[in-house]
Image (cartoon, rainbow over the protein chains, first blue to last red):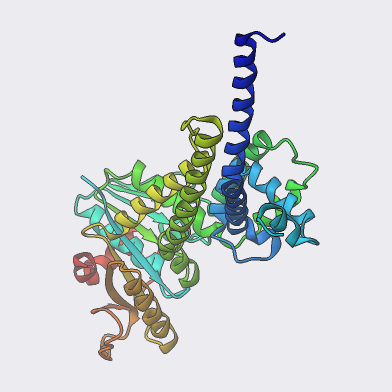
Amino acid sequence: MMTLSQAFEKLRESLSTLDEMQRRRAVDMVQWEYDELRHVFALLVLGNAVGLPAPPAEIGLGLLPDMEEELLLMLDRLELAHSPLSKLYSSLPVD
Amino acid sequence: MTARLVFFAGKGGVGKSTLAALFALGHAERGRDVLLLSLDPAHNLGDIFGQEQTVQPAEVRAGLQIYEPDIQDISRHYLRDIEEQLRASYRYLTSINIDRYFSVLRHSPGLDEYAMSLLFRTTISRYGGKDIIVFDMPPTALALRFFAAPSVSTIWIEQLIALRSIILERKEMITRVTLASSTVETDKILQRLERERTLYAGQTEALQREGSAIHIVINPDELSRQEGRRIGRELTALNLPLGRSMLNKADVTAGMDFDEELPAPLLLPRSAFELTGIEALHRYLEMHGAALLAS
């Protein structure tokens, strides 16, 4: 038989999980926007790698050492190139 | 005390280096402390003063140093520095073929003017205590890219800072909601962009500093005049201080037609003797130097 304190603890854990789930759901869209913005940033800075107009070379070169995450994000996007809508559909509330 | 910056720009072969040398020597002879610097990758200041190329500032007479740095070498140093930072930062260097990507950038056409910008910043900070720093500029295309670099790069930097700020705002929002914390670590990319913006702003301020001037050297031929007009238009659009147009190798008996597209002209007659060596330059200055030194 569960004691009152154990019951409270279970309830607290459930609420905590629920809170975390709600927080994650609340930032899903922002997270998606955040990734896209970083992708756009990487494209603007390193666009010359894929044939886009690029900023003066020193800007891209100067930022390159700190752009590991952005570069990996770009490579990740290349893998999605053949199904560009799948990511969008998985993030947006589309039935 | 901040040095007055004087530039000599114009078409290749019009005599920029000679006029810059005359101007620098004339002021040194009048007791000023002058640095004459060549930003032209094809230097000839050493030839004019009868010296070997001076990759470090070298005194040619009291109050006058000449300096012919290797622009390509500055580019190479800069790229080597970036390469070292890349190797330190990237763990996936070989798998994503950064080496190849990097070697493509090595041939980027923008690096010469950036090397010039780096050199310009170092020079005005290291030799800012001089009375005058005279710049012998490369031919028009590269010179204009150098003059335009701060405004072109600043446009990009401003846009990237704006975008980066939005990215960091979103990141902070996510951190606040998911971790119930508003602590966002310092963003190195934003810091680099802001630092570069400050450096370019300093470069523009120096170019626009009171007493600074960009003189346009032309010859008595239509091609160099056309190019001179183009330089004038570009500098005006960039809001940079236009000096005089200097008609070098002029036939003084023919005078110079008024050209409303060029700044107030100054006639410098063709020399009857070879303008190499301090003695010859000094002789020319005694005959025709007054107006040049007043500009």
